Length: 201
Image 1 (cartoon, helix red, strand yellow):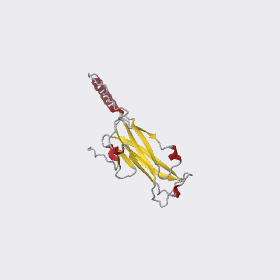
Image 2 (cartoon, one colour):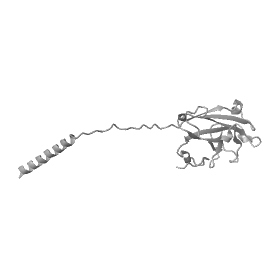
Image 3 (cartoon, one colour):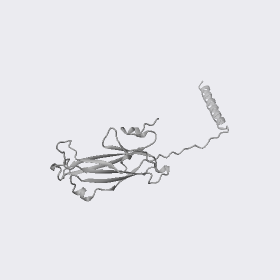
Image 4 (tube, helix red, strand yellow):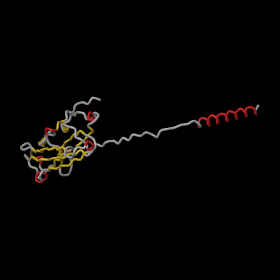
């Protein structure tokens, strides 16, 4: 009985090896892998202050003075972008601690756009944020640096009579941040409050 079982197993093993050998004997062919290369674009900007307040205003600001500032922003990435700027200001004591005016909601510093100010639109939800109206081309399009460059000009004014003695010796810091996002595929819709038309997906 054991001998019959052994013979059966041996026959099955030999049959399997013959089938496998027969399969390997067929003519076959295969192609080389077909590959596609996708290189992700880049979203990059540079921003520099290209016009500064005079040293006298930076060091000895007087009520009624108005300082001019200019920022130059360049799209250095490959992709077209939308651009926004957020401008905030804060008073400080000389020791670096925050100065809180009395009354607490008193505002004596204002900033306004000049030059090509019409090229910027205020955020509908945030008074401190402005959007550049048009998309800015990237390097992949072949656009010149001039075509990829925009300006933001602002005037910063310290009010006259409204600026009382509590502000003497205090320091005002104006902070400007620029952000960009790809202009394609409706990505800008993640910026709530933006003025751009909704892109159909």
